[in-house]
Length: 79
View (tube, rainbow, N blue to C red):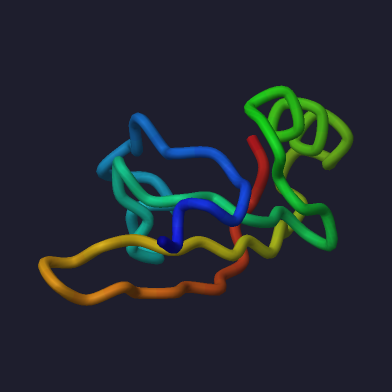
């Protein structure tokens, strides 16, 4: 199963924010931020804290859309 590869499950997405614009949804698996693999929620906080406000951040995620598994790669801006 695709969720067995590490990462964290996204619980909430601001519908007006950049994550929603790239297709990230609650239930998706956030796998990397920049070059860093995500193992747990603490990784997410630490990586974003190290990013400068407004700096672009590349993310990789996977999610289910009905029967399909989607993968996304996008550049977000840390706030």
